[in-house]
Image 1 (cartoon, rainbow, N blue to C red):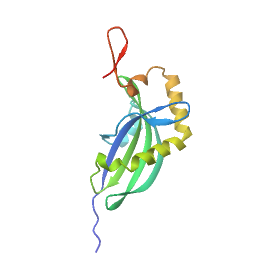
Image 2 (cartoon, one colour):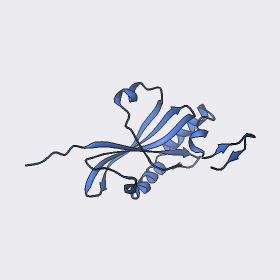
Image 3 (tube, one colour):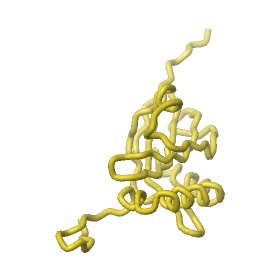
Image 4 (cartoon, rainbow, N blue to C red):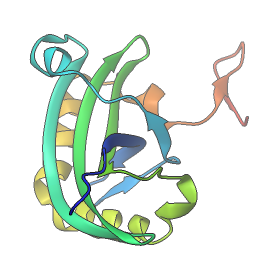
Length: 148
């Protein structure tokens, strides 16, 4: 007799930036909520969503369905570029589980030239909007960037 275990969808997101030669993560993974089907279809905040890869990943003692997406969201600070990783698993996923995945994510980003061009296109179409999402720092009274 087989037992069906209940799987949940667990999502994490990390900011990315593109240069003329590569796309790289510029921040840490953070747990996020999955967009609903309605949000995917009608939200004015979700400007672009591209599936980069889907694979089976060995995690703990099971094989987990995993997918990696590139998204562009509109926030109050401008555009936010990110990679979102989604797991479908009956187990919980912690940030400590990402040690092996980070290299695979960066390899996928490096091999996917389309994302590099798409992100640069968004940055050219909306100049200045992306700056707030990838620069860590604050601006003083005179406009000079200060470290945090």
